[in-house]
Length: 438
Image (spheres, rainbow, N blue to C red):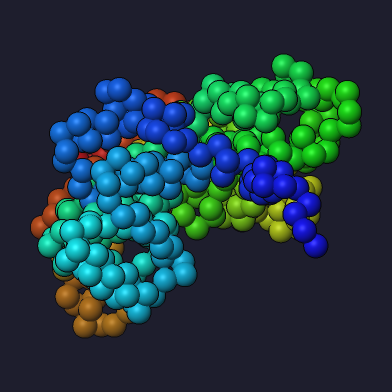
């Protein structure tokens, strides 16, 4: 058929086929945007290269923050052979082949920088297989993970590799990446200022996602059209937040929601609730956590909080999504604005501890029933005073095991309904003291 493009035309056509994110890959560490704490003039990696002390590392951070690119650049800077595998697609046989090839390469004087994407996907035995080749210098390992290495990688590997954290890109970094893309493409994105800021927010800290969205805008915008924020959302739809329900995103956001509730900030609590629901989190998981918050952080300061949270569960199960989500939001605001007390939580923990340490002590005989003549002859129930027959319906007897003595676990705070409970307990303590039960 002949050469349709000519030599230069073919190269230009092939360049156009490559995704923008691939064409935008930095060629030096100095070009990496958003990770200056690692790649800047005083960054950790820069210092390691200057000291010629590059060892095995784990790169921990969200997608699209430059982990793979930085690993490639390090291999280029150190003159090592770059080898890349993914833990998702590799098994024991693949690892053996990679290690054997690296040993052969090393015998010829060439060292290997092995980049393992999604390294947390390997099981413990597979992770252990890296240890010998790391120790004898066959490979320099760089593992990349989006999950917390402390939980997902074993201690033996972590003791041999330095963990470096890659940060999600802030909106300023995303804007700089988009400006570089415009320079490379020789055209500006057809966006007004509000739409440009919206696009940076939609990227959710992911540089690769930002460039993919930019390509989509260039493909879909009509000639001469300038998109505002609303039109941008219509054109490219809303990008789902980066959120893995089974991993760090799940635990980080539920932790943020819980602490916002505990800190009596309903606005922040609603924000994290909305993020979790938008990310596809199971609403029933969220409402179960709200129920836990109602008893852990509020307790007797507002006994209604538990009822409201439990009612939200019932309402959601009846209505489903999205209608039932409003009931969850109502419960979220209720627990966030309720008076806070962990007195019940602390009391129960203390009671559990006492039960573990003194669990073999018998209750006092006065509060034990005597269904048989033998038990009655042994003194079971002797001296028990029926509280309803006592003044103020309160006998003031001591119900703890005799060898343990009276304990004080529950100490209500002077907030919410617990203020009234505290008055009752103080009143009963005074009566108990007057009647010799203290």
